[in-house]
Length: 473
Image (cartoon, rainbow, N blue to C red; front, side, top):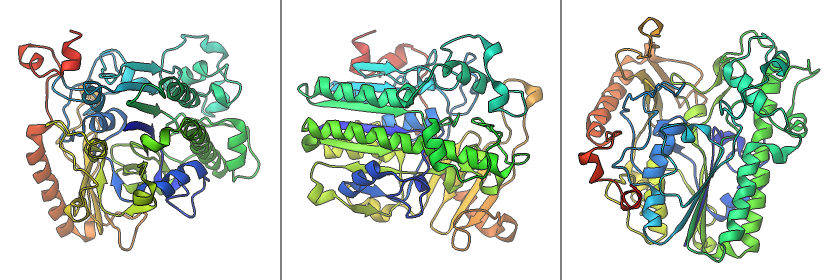
């Protein structure tokens, strides 16, 4: 059984028409996957954002409570933002030891930074360059039109670097995530006779900077007169932005969602033409979502653990469409459940370190009354009726002591009366907040022994390094 996975970064669940009838984006290709597969309607990240989520996805093992292990050459200083542990056993490592050809094609710059090791176990791995703070070029900075993309004229380092990286993009085939999917198509053609294989595709779009091809921006723009500003890396708040500028941000984001769907469709057409869908599991998912103006907020963030940021799409298509096609699972599921589920479908036992649940055993339907999602120094406890968010540490550690940020207070949302999580009612329901805080502390105590590991190679770590890595030491 082959495996094809597409993880599209920051893809909000309500921007897929198979999830929401009122989706602002038409996604016919992912819709078809959902019609032929199993759609999970209550999937949430466990440890987010980007790298913590990949750690959970690649290993089937929870990451929260996080380790604080910043690397001095990485501008992202966040709890949980660290390489894979030496003891970890990734899905790619597990499969390559069982005769699989494994391929990773990604434009996700964070997993290829110095010292990161998220390509472990992949026989082929390709990095499509140019996203965000990927240092593809050093200049010239003086020709970057910052004013057009940031009306303040300041320009963040992320924005400036991205504008230099993308200055020669002419049509949608130049967009990094499209290059990922095109190279994925090549992988399928080259390995159709070399089975079994696993192809894991990482598309960083629709992560910010939100910069979509012009045709798709115009298609999704709902504003009036455009002032010429393409605020592709806007501030975290809509304060100070005109209504049309906010509409323009949404148009770029929606255009990127449509772009991913379009090229995912071409990948699926290739798989079908090659006869691969008859013996391949296909998965579409995301790591997290983002705010798009709710509560006046844009972007994801540690203190924004509401459904817009924490719920994710998850669709699994099995070749036996008659048995699995069109099924919808309402039960709570999380990222750590994906690896054991896929291995179960492939008839392969999971490694001992894989602690997620096989979603197709039936036990999941009644097993979870709540889920935990954590981002940096904040965590949330979600049930069907409440979502509680709180700092889980006593202070906010940053490299410079003088820059320490105060932690935000607790939040509580009544999902029965406020499903969009817009009104914080923690003052009115302190008893609920206390109950959910106790649930969170119990989760931390239970999981703390299993979320650590070795980041430095030594004798104790070496004995646990998977065979695939030991053969190359």
